[in-house]
Length: 413
Image (cartoon, rainbow, N blue to C red; front, side):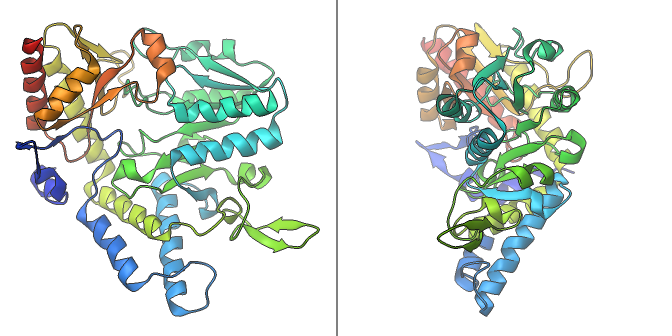
């Protein structure tokens, strides 16, 4: 059984008060809270095993290196990559996408070549490609969404041209909660010989990801959105691609040999890991993955989908409520998951910032604004939304508190 009370005890911050009200934390798409086991593991390593990895022959360095590389193996298993060489540690999803945008464009793209993204992308999957467009003259094209907040995948071939060199797509929208059929996108792309990058920041915390089943060429996610520490993330890349891409940064750790005439680079994955890694954070990330595995990804997904459906049904009872994105977690025709753990909304003419500020005074933490997705806001014809996002520790009672708060604020206006 899903023991929500036991789970919540692992997160002491959830028992605190804000403005004299019990905290209701519904901003998990921005960052999740951390269980005690993650904090304890990181503290224990700092106290007992703190030494720079890979470079030392002494005992502490060897221990720290073992923990760091064990974390890489845990990540490999978690997403079912073939090899640990395909797991590159980064600072997060944003750095991982910047890495691929830079290295891929430098080596695989010429002026006039195209990258295809979508209307629902986070800025982290738009701006890195735009920077390359300014540097190299590549073209950023975007696949549209329909009025239900779903990608028009049936029309993807209309947007792929002979100049399309890579597709970079969000697995789950951080605004709409839409679950994109990336496996289908990958299949279409691969028929044209085009690699696919997947932004999995909003999917990895909520569902089982199998990169071999998806067959994506690259995939990125962040530790802090899945109960791990900030400043750590993962780039998965197929070995054949990582081998041919040039390094993203230069410096220590990523070199094989340096002379004044030439530098040769380390083998994978170290070629992409310049400088001292955050080896404490990798251990924290591995501990967070173990924690999620103990609860069970299927159990987490079922719990969060139940919360998402419950929230949407409750919000529909509020007059002048406007929900964005799919309105059920399961597609009515395909019976496949179509929405996950995110509910964005507006109520009448109440500004999203006013709603979020007043909810905060009731102890309810939600996100307001454009959510780093301004092109999507333009497509929707709005400046921003209120976003409630769920995690494995949230409850229906917290959603009831949210709905009651929205009712109270709506009456004020």
